[in-house]
Length: 529
Image 1 (cartoon, rainbow, N blue to C red):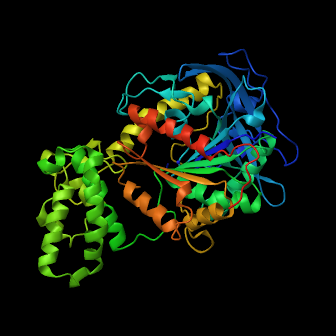
Image 2: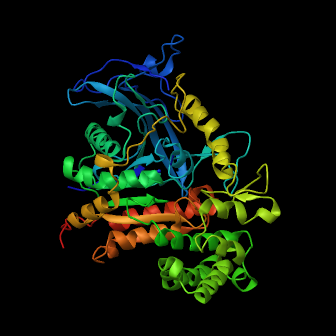
Image 3: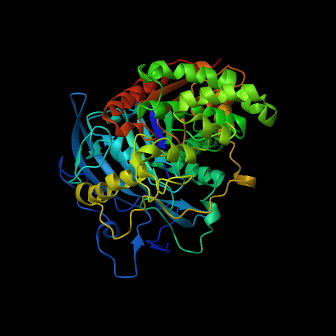
């Protein structure tokens, strides 16, 4: 049998609502017939399209709306159907406790879907919807931004000529209390959804049902997550394998978190220096001999200093010799763009919040946390941290209007529910049964499954999930070195959402295509060591 590739994509970061009733085992309801290409289908479920009575907002538990369209990708015309809808989460008694909203794109000119990849996409937060990668990275449509990722008006939608829909079907999933997804009522325990491992467990069950409904079990499968979504997919890799016997071919981590791998103390402080150097280079704050080099030609010098000199010096703490401390401070100043004075005042360990405030202080600006190419303006130049995150403000400006417009006017999903860009999911459990061990989970999944490969994508200007920390994850996740031939890392000249920059949008999607090709086995190639 030929095999399908399924790419599972995941990334960023009240009021109770009632649901249309439905029980597990009754199957999908409310599916609309496909419309003529480029025209919206008539919604099958009035719950998805009609205006509810005031104070009686309802989310359909199990319904779909389908439309048809086409996009030109890499010069090739790709027709597709887009299905938006909800699929329930059931409790142990078969009672619906939540409805999860998704958007599913299928290339419609494929006759044999057993040879067709599928992409399942999440973002992270925790608490953010799948909007980011959906409308700016891998999907068939893009929001209107400039070539560096800044907002433009009017808020329009255009085709994405770099989408991976030419090589893979895609589904984007909004976890509970993000996007249009909601709990069934206020009595459902929040602990079922809002914790590191609770999140992984219910989403694995949800994916089991989705893959069964869409008949994609014969396929090789891939998970991709962004930001906290990397925690989610790293855990899902093992949960799907152990609880659903669903084996993957790849996991893609976009701007990964620490995955439960300890980076506290000297390690965490030292690992930030290459990011500081990249940011200082971008804003032209480095000495001339460094500034005149290209970014990727300059960074190896900083990385070697970080591992070979800076980390050992920080490990000595207050027992580091005074003259050695002065030498280290001089080099850290050279690479970070900060003064030797403030570095010594912080005992060589510069907090990220202080860096974002200090680097451009003399120019009257702060730099962004998630993408330090972005500049902000504070009430006062004094202080230890920025007033706000200029990059996140810019992105919410860019995304919120287009995603609401797109669902209503392009995909014909009409509802009075608020689309949660960031939803109410806190407190998020991270201790006890929800302790984060997802890096180790991913290692176990890779060790047990010779088919499973890893791709990590990082932006050099990401200060929340820094690129050098992402590399450190890979080194520590596989201390034996036996898995490293199945691990790849790619860097991009932008920040947390590297795909917002046009040049990186092209490169990062091409890297996904290459990864799928590399990690899909040849016919009849056995999974063995």
